[in-house]
Image (cartoon, rainbow, N blue to C red):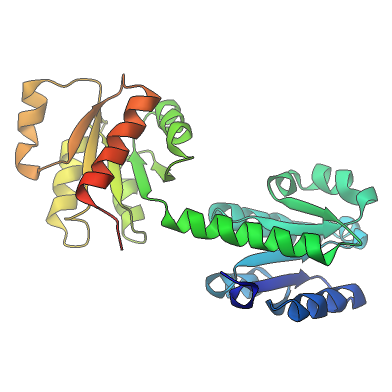
Length: 261
């Protein structure tokens, strides 16, 4: 994507000559730029049409509890969407900002006065990252063991886009609002177990065709026979290694083409 196709939003807490100058510089470089107020609703309204966000931090924000609260909400909202912000602030206030809002450390920080060439590279880097993330297969893990689910998520996060829920009914609610290329479903769960969840998924037209692989600590003939008619795409023993799990999933996607546009 060339710069002419990149939409940039600059979040501004109050009018600033520096921000207006930054806006002009980015426009001159071919970016599409809009100024957005530090308001959650205003920022949320731009999410679908914005490739990168710049937040210009004035030192006076540190003394304003309401503005800090909004900053925290912005960080949370972007983290939920796996997006990174580009913060611009003074070198003297960097550590204080990090201490006040620790989530800032998960994003990019540029010290002002910012070099427009450096800023342009950061915008392009974030855009490339977002595009690459969109192309990755999305996998939902449904497992009531948070430690095991987190481990699998860590194993797979560099190869796939990962989401996790802790029980089957949460998974069904999540799928009502989100799409996914594959579900890794725990076979043995309390209250509603994996086979029952798969039966519910197969009975609904919106989820009937989603590929499902069972995560299981047992691979007996009885457990396999119970769900044979529901046609899961496979079984993965929980004792599998990271290398074998990644290979299993990559082979599956390559063979079946699930999730391809």
